[in-house]
Every structure is written in C-alpha cells, then in structure tokens.
Length: 382
Image (cartoon, rainbow, N blue to C red; front, side, top):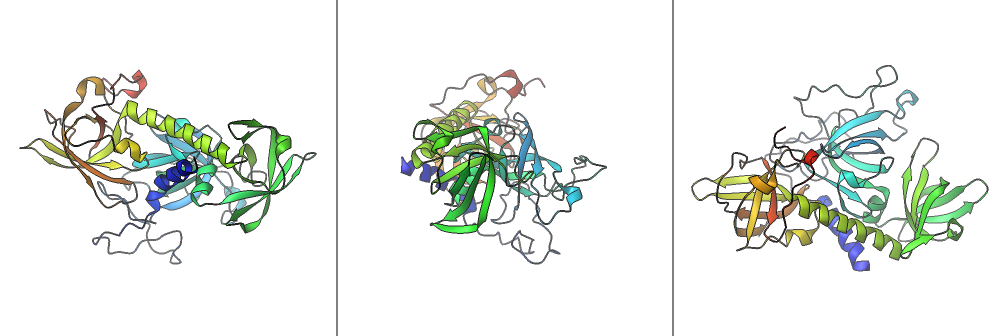
C-alpha cells in the first residue's frame, strides 16, 4: 500500500521534472524564483508544451466551477505582497488542454474537487487575443493575479504537501477554543513557525479504513489535511484530517479509481503532432496528469479509436463519430511539463477534419467500451 501512494505522487510529480528548454526559446523569461521582475513571463506557444519552471504559482479557494467547460474561479489567498484593499479578490481561469488536477494524492478532474477546497495552482498569462473582461469587485478592484487565467495545474493541500514529502505535526489541540496548532515538517525538521487552525465540529477525521473521533487528535501525530477559508481568519478551517498512512493510502486509492473510471469513459486526451495523409497515419502525444497504467492499455497491433475533441477536452459524439484502426507504434518521448511522454501512431480507417496538427483528440483503446456520455458533455448539435 505504501508503494501505491508513493507511485501516485511520483506520477503526479513528473511535471516537475527538469525538462530541457527548447533551443528556440533563447529569450529569458521571468519565473517565481527570478529576481529580475522586468523580464516578461513565458508566453505559451500553440502546439508546444511549456518549459519547466515557467508557470506562476499562487493559491486560493475554489468558489465556482464549470466542470464541463473546465473553468473555475479562485478567491486568491491573502499574502504580504497585497494591499489590504486587494484582499480576497477572485480570478476566473480556464484549465489548459494539457492542464491537470490532483486531489487526495491522485489524478483528478475539476468535477472531483468540492467547492470550498483550498488549492495550489500554477498559471500562465492570458492569451494576448483574449478580450474577456476580468472579474472585478469592490469598486472595480482586480486581483494582482488577474492576468494569469490559463491554469497548468491545481492541487489540494493533501496532494501538494504529500508530493513535497511534508507533513503537519500536531503540537496541541485546545478543545475549548476548537483550535489545532500544527507545524509543517520534512524529515522531522520544522519548516516555519507553528500555525493555529480552526477545528470545526464538522471536520472529518480519518484513521485506517474509517472515521476517527476528534478526541483521538493528539500532539505528536503526523497528519495531512485539507482546508477551507484559508487566510480569511488565520491559516484556515480544517475540513478533513488524515491521521495515519493507511487512511491516506485509502483516500488516494479511491481517487485513483475515480480517475480511471473517468478516463475510460471519456478517452485519453492528447494533441495531434502530425498526419500522413497518404498512409492515413495520425501521430498523437498524450497529455500528462494521467495514471500510467491507463497508457499501458495502448498496445501495438491492437485497435484504437480517435475522437475529435475541443480545447476543454469534450468530444462531439464518440459513439458514432470516432474512427478506429490499428496502433502502429508506441514510443516514449522526452517528458515535458504537461506531457505524458508517450506518443502513438494510429491508422484510422478514415481521416476526419479534426485530425490536424495541434488539434485535440481523445483515444479509446480497443478494450474500452465507448458509451454515450450525458447530453451536456456531447457537443454534437450545439
């Protein structure tokens, strides 16, 4: 079981791998670690994955979501860099086609993450051609992060700290004030000062394969937890607490199965790299943030269906409009942020208009039953 959670964390952390910056990306760009704030932020290039470390990080609370369109709104956390007049302002963002979500230490979809969950996000600046008016409240005030509306990755607190191999050590619990004091630690060494969190009567506590009582919380325990109302009235309110490794493994295993079911019903997403019109060969690179075991189900010699998809990864009518043919090749390519590192060549019986370089598709291995999705997820006839 320990291998399960570590394997999922490793899978989710592949996007952090040091991908080489392309030769044509000669101009320097700004990063969160750079000291030169006059440098421009990296601008996404159509049909290319971004270089490692080029996204901008900030965190906030999920306050609105459209799971079909893969759009959401975060209330940005308060930081020392903000003026008080710009506390708690929202930003609206869209998941990039290769953007990924992690929840409970496993790959996820936006539909899996409850409203109110505190999230860590990595973002890119908006498309220069995007003339959508950003969110404004409090006398036309905009968040400092308002221009970063293309999301590369979202993680809940559980996933974020587990991937960094950091845990919260409970220092004490005050039953009268309902306060829990904890210190973030890595390798038993504290990171920063102790913080005081709000323990609610509704806070779920997990131990082993089931619930535990809040009375079982004690100093010295190494835990993970998820928050809501972070930075509004202190570090945040505790939503869920996992007391031991067994409970954390169970949460990850459950979410991993949710993810596998979601992908098997909707197909593996990727974009078209090239098309050989004469031979009817479509070359596709799959996006990251997917359980590697699902990718193993693409097998040379077996058949696979290709359905045209939109940037929000939704298809039209895959039951009827996908085209199938043999998988000619499965190759491992360099892993880049947003990429699974797996590229395939498929020879469908007919080339559709949507099979063009840089266009999004979803692939169904022969062993996956293709069923009609709920009407709201089908774009045929819209």
